[in-house]
Length: 367
Image 1 (spheres, rainbow, N blue to C red):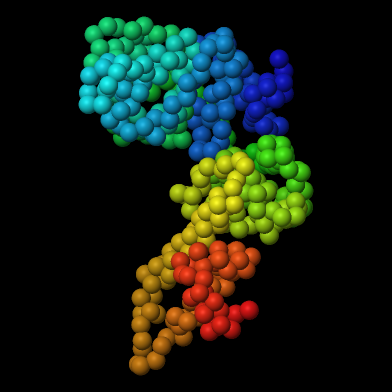
Image 2: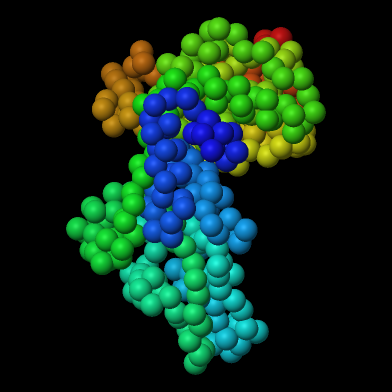
C-alpha cells in the first residue's frame, strides 16, 4: 500500500512533507505491537492517527476502544479501565467489564493520558508489564492481550519533572513517539482540508457543495488556527450552515475566526450535522455571548489601567466615559445585526421582551 492509498483509506488529509513522513512511520510501526505515544496540540487529529495504526495492524479485525482519561472523574477511572465485581463499592449493582477486557485482542487508545491519576498509573503500569489485572473487588486475575496507544497535548517530561506523572510509566509508553504538527506549520494542507470538510458536510446534509471566494481562502490561509484541524472543521461547517446563498466569502468567515480565537472554552464546541433551527439559534447566542465577553474583558482591562477614567472629575464626566443610553443603543444595534434584524431573536439575545425591544427601538429612533 502506498502512502497516498493509506491516507485515503484512513482519512488522513494532507500532502505536506510533514504528513507524508509521519504516515510513513505510522505504516512501519502499525504492524508491530509496540506502544505508541502520540503528541501534539489539541485538535491536530491524534485519534485519527490512532485509528489508522489500529486499522493497519494485525489486530484490525478486533476492537479499538477509545478512552478519554480527562473526561472520566478520578474516582471511577480505575473501575472504567479494570472493571469491578458486584458490591465492590456503592453503586456497583452487578459485575462489569473494564475497557481492558473489552479491548482484549485489540487496541486500547488512551487519550489525555497525562490526566490519569498517579494511583491509577501504578496499576496501569502493572498491566503493561504483566498483561494481567484484577477487577475492583475481585479475587481472580484476568489476563489480557491489548496493544496500547496513548496521546497527550502536554509535555510528559515536564509532567514527570513536576511529579505528576510516573517516570517508569513514561519510559514504557514512549517506545515510539509520534509528534503530529500543528496546522499552522503545514499551511499547504489547509485548502485540501477545507475542500474535504465542505464536501463531507454537504454530502451528509444532502445540500449543494458551497463555493468559497478567493478572499475567504486568503483569510483562512493566513489565520494561525490555534484550535488546529478541529477548529477549521467547525468554522467550515458553521459557515455552510449559516450561509443562505451557497457562496462563502471573508465577511462570513472572519466573525467565526474571531469567535474561535477569542474564547478557549467555546473552541471545542461540538458541531452537529442536520442542525435544527433551535440549534442554530443557540449557536448565534453563543457567538453573541463571546462578543459580549470580549467587550467586558476590554472594559475590565481599561478600568485596571486607568481607573480614574470611570469617575467624575470636577463635576463633569470624563470624555472617555460613554453614556448608558449610548451603550444600550449600541447593544440593540449589535443584536439586530447579529440576527439580521430578526426582532424576536434580538430580544432573546438581549434578555428583554419583544415589547420592551419595540419601545426601545422607538425611543432611540432605530428603524
